[in-house]
Image (cartoon, rainbow, N blue to C red; front, side, top):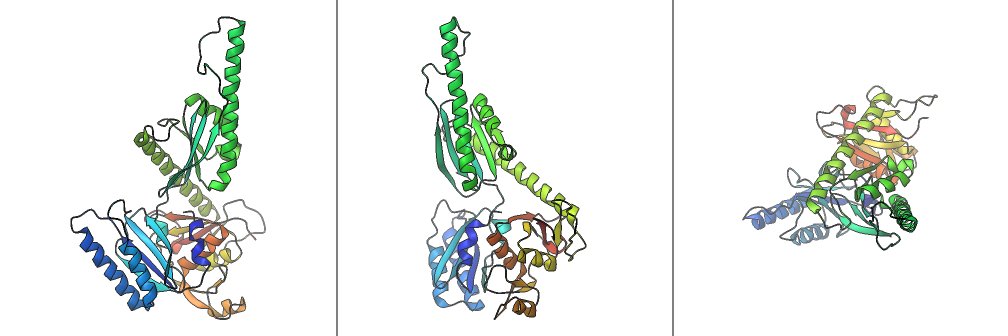
Amino acid sequence: MELGFLKPLFARPGPWASVYIETTRATEDAQRIQALRERAVASQLIDAGADAYTVRAVVNRLAGEPVSGAPPGRALFAAGAEVVLDVPLAKAPAAVEATWSVLPHIAPLAGLRGDEPSCLVAYVDRTGAELELRDAHRRETVGHARGREWQGRGHRSVPADRHEWHYRNKVENAWNETADIIAAELVRLWPESGADLVVLTGDARERRAVLGRLPERMRAVTVEAEAGARTPGAARDALDGEIARLCEAFAGERLERALERFRIGRGRPGEHRTSTVDTGPGEAAEGVPAVVDAVRTHQVATLLLGADGSDAAREVWIGPGVDEVALQRGQAQAMGVDKPVRARADDALLRSAAAAGSEVLVVPAGMPGPAGGLGAVLRWTG
């Protein structure tokens, strides 16, 4: 899960109201059910000690849910009488959950928002490409690449004479220049887009030419889709289905790679394995003490959260700084935190991971992962 969208939550102090609620309206009495859910949210927040102004802000936002087009669920985060973030969920929460805590309770997002990678999609033909950024929650055009225009483009017959051969050679050169232009635009957009995956679709010859012009690091995350066309709206259902399959395969392979690196580098549960010899990218941290130590030193490349782990709700001590996390109050004070407060380990670690730009992956229930449900693959060892 990419965490950049959470940064507004860490730019202001709490306490925070965090709400997870189902918002589907598939039944005839959906409006009545929605009203009951809203009352449940208000009741839980009041019981937890939330102020009346923040409760009202949350309920007013929920009341504005559209009748049609609602996602399966929503997560709302509010503080100081203002809803700061309203996140659509790919999955409906099992039940209404509303909490009031010093940190926003962001941990459930990892399993509910969906782990579909974001894609930079290029709809390619011999005149250029339309570029689109999409993920599970949005789809927007982000650029265009225009190639050179040649009359008679697409002429594929055997040249009748030298003049015809010269003309056809110019057309071939124009196709190659178009591939150069598309590849250059993709290389320019890819870092700023934050896309995990690049998808080339449309003309088979031209997309292969574009693929061959991408740098090796980018080719490693680029795939071809057969179902698309230059116009993004064409054959939409077939392309959406193919991209969904490509994303699912990519996400599965990404998790398997991370778990393999974790298994290679893991030590005993709860122990931070370090070495004076660089043993490669497999070094790992497992358990709350080791992962807390790793996030404080910005070592976490990938934070692993087990769906059925027992360590998630374990309490740690935190300060206002995103790296101020400790196992004991005295440790936090030794770090310079004047008034440490308790917080859930998963929320505190996710706050640190978001600030550091770390990747977060959820290990499904039943799949071998870190003991206790919290682990990390490290950027380096020390």
